[in-house]
Amino acid sequence: MTDIVPQLLDWYRREQRDLAWRRPGVSPWQILVSEFMLQQTPVARVEPIWLAWIERWPSPSATAAAGAADVLRAWGKLGYPRRAKRLHECATVIATEHGDAVPSDVETLLTLPGVGAYTARAVACFAYRQRVPVVDTNVRRVVARVVHGRADSPASVRDLDDVAALLPDGPDAPVFSVALMELGATVCTARTPRCGLCPLSDCAWRSNGFPAATETVRRVQRYAGTDRQVRGRLMDVLRGNNSPVSRAQLDVAWLTDTAQRDRALDSLLVDGLVEQTADGRFALAGEGD
Ligand code: SF4
View 1 (cartoon, rainbow, N blue to C red):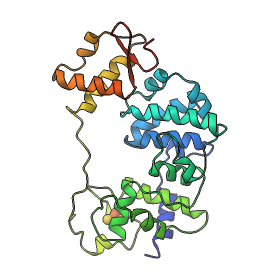
View 2 (cartoon, rainbow, N blue to C red):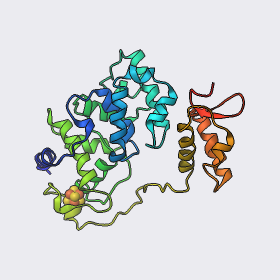
View 3 (cartoon, rainbow, N blue to C red):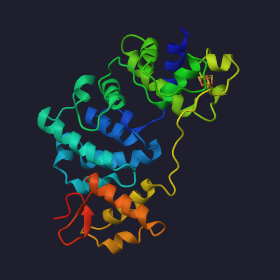
View 4 (cartoon, rainbow, N blue to C red):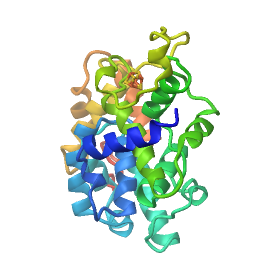
């Protein structure tokens, strides 16, 4: 296990993907934006939206000054638009309470709207180069395989300790963290790990003959037919109109199940992503006046 650090660092320096938010000159705020977007959306869909976003709103104060509807439109089809609303709120708090600078310590980061344990650690590590363990599903899977000899692992309080035990000292620590994540994203993938390309000579799961998973790890949810898809259809209609729309205009977005459509619209209203005007029409947040 002692070779994992040099093997992984060498591999990452050779093989890392050229992702826009990893390039020189990207600010902590812009890294924070990428982490919000990447929470439940793949890299390929995030990258173009992120590039347009940081060009338009490069700082927390610029984002805070934008209208809520503009932010929801710019979020486009990334999905889970509550993240856009929380990012807007986060920008406002950073601009007004932190001098327009993203805090660098995990505890303060955790006080920001929409910033959970993973995002706080990711920003401290990737933006401020701190030696803090960062655990996402990719890292958890790699550690389960390499260290514990298991196919995968559900989230556990031990995760942070497991990763902390692997981290090298000094400036290699944040590079090691991102390399661990990269290995899980590109080589040690959930369904078809490409062990022939793996830089690690010592992997307990491989040594044990790849034993099957013994516990159910949560699978990615299907999308078609879900309330999430219906919410997305309704948001598409509202994003495409600069003025409030009638109920009939929304209704045609989902004709399969009217009760499901009503439930989705109610949830968008409750989440504050959609507003109803005095005359009963509907608009994106901030455009219902
Ligand atoms: S040897 Fe295979 S299972 Fe083990 S870490 Fe590498 S890719 Fe993953």
